[in-house]
Length: 278
Ligand SMILES: [Zn+2]
Image (cartoon, rainbow, N blue to C red):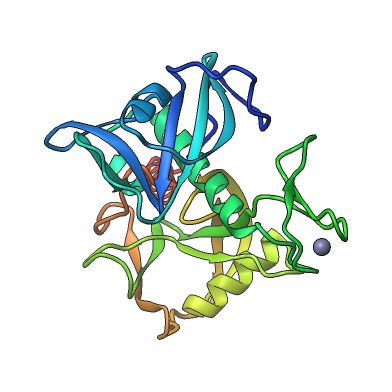
């Protein structure tokens, strides 16, 4: 996920919100979409939702090409209107334009933030929205909370023309990916990568090179991807998380994660570079 071209983020809902605004309405973690045909999904407008009787607290996301975008938080027992369906965000991969998928992911994170910050974490007083920025503040003790973003590191370990890939117990059968883990309080990015690689597969890494990053709304990660050069050690898997880890030749790779993921791009771009001898 990314910030689409032509999108301007904002938090204060405008006085007039047009009926053709994009509306991302969530019941639990599923978004309400128009379903005109088998496996076809369309993000509804605010007017379409209103016509279907869908109501919920709106949160403004900003404007995409001057069209407003709102997130709606629906009650857990909200009905599914005729011709519409609640679907998981992953269902929308490749089914709606990338820009709208990215905004749906952003909308979910805002709704999740609002749901989980209704009360002050320090004194328990109900919070209120801050006018100057997207944040919740406590009118009693002044504590301010922002939408949570959890940085996670992804590392693809390379050695000559080989890459180290692992299969987690939770992965689909046969799929391998790069190593990943969340940053702990007090760690640098470099600390985290060295620790994660050491803990998960028992290998040491040397030089680390930045690749790119991706917002990943499951539920609020920022995945930051790197290529890490092998520096020593034999593969020894951490049983709790990793089912299997192996060196793969860049000419003979296993089943990889879907192309929407940064993991796939990291692996394919790196393998192509190693095959080209650079
Ligand atoms: Zn408080």
